[in-house]
Each structure stands twice: as C-alpha cells, then as structure tokens.
Length: 243
Ligand SMILES: *[C@@H]1O[C@H](CO)[C@@H](O)[C@H](O)[C@H]1NC(C)=O
Picture 1 (cartoon, rainbow, N blue to C red):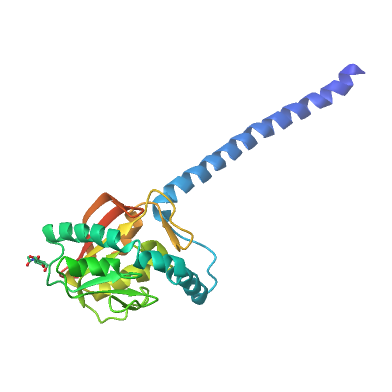
Picture 2: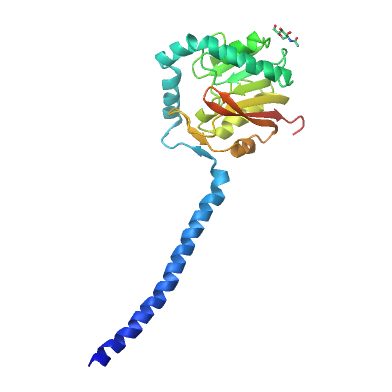
C-alpha cells in the first residue's frame, strides 16, 4: 500500500521541480533584462519633464506664482540685489576676458526676474543688454516667454540663462535661443545637475548630455563646475557660423 501511494507522488514532485527551475531562471533573466534596460536608457532619460501640468495655462500660472511672489520680489529687488549684481559682474568680466562677451555685444538674459544679471552686464560695459520674463521689470526686463521669444532671428550676440529648469518644453527653450542668436553668437547656461531644483521647476536634468543634444545648431565651448546661486554647472555654446 505504501509503495502505491508514494510512487505516483514521486514523479509529480520531479515534474514540479523540473518546471520550477526554468521558471526561476526565466524570472531572474527577465528581471535582469528590465534592470539593464533601465540603465541603458538612462542617458536619454537625463532630462525629465515633471508631470502635473494639464495645460500651458496651468504651467504659466505656477511660474507666475514664483515670479509674482511679493516676498521673493522684495528680496530680489533689495536685500539680494547688491550681492547678486556684484557676483554676476565678476562672472561677466571673466566671460569678457575669455572673449565670449564684448562691450559691443547685444545681450539677452532669459528669465531675468528683476534683472540683476542685466544690471551686471550694464555695469561691466555691455550697454545693449536686456532681460525677458513673464512679468516685466522695466527698464531692465521686458515681457517675454522663453518658449516663444519676442525677438527677430539673429538679434543677439550673447544670451545667458539660469532658468533652464523652468522650461516645460526644453526643445523650444533652446530652439528660441538658437533662433535669436546670430551665427557665432554665444549662449551661457547655468544649470543644476547634482540635486533637484525647486518646486517651481518644470524639468529635472541629470547630466549635460540632453542639453548638448538640444543645441542642434551650436558647438560646446566648455562645460565646467561652478558655485552659482544654487546652480552647479556652466555650459557654454557657440552657434555655428554655417549650418
Ligand atoms: C568696457 O566697458 C567698461 C565699462 O564702461 C570699461 O571699463 C572697459 O574698459 C570697456 N572694455 C573695453 C575693451 O573697451
């Protein structure tokens, strides 16, 4: 009796074990594939648009919340002003020394808030300089959306921005800079790579690779680490003379 009950069970256990081995192998292989596909696609995913903007209007409203925040504006225009203008002046002087910026350059600051960068440009002798932002701050900053700059093609020799993380459409942000730059014009971006930016940011950048890819009409002049008001990386592009 014992024999007849255990014999039919034995092959069952063997069959079960034989099935289990390939199943485990398959599972671990597909797990590895999923892992490696994540790491493989990572370079292309180094620029991530934050979810949660149903419409362009809701995005603009959120951006305006920061730009129009009376407390922030007060700080930008007073307590923050001298220190920022001083630091930006030294930065623009170094660009002049490197022959990336000249007194005769027509210069634009993209997303300039209350225009500290513009004031610094004027201080170091770049008199034909202006900023754009969603909220104007005359006379230094005029109204303009960086996704659709209010300027003709080839207007500027130099553009600076430290608000790339606020772009909901990074390809438009970069496309507009390249459109309004003259051939041979210089674009300097200060970005944050090592950490996540603030709650008003519309994208997160994990390396300079996607940025370089977006500048289709330009060459990279240099990439370097900086300590720039919470931003850690400077990327300088020059628009090609011939496209
Ligand atoms: C640029 O302008 C500044 C400020 O007016 C002046 O000190 C500097 O000498 C000028 N640089 C050149 C190269 O002309």
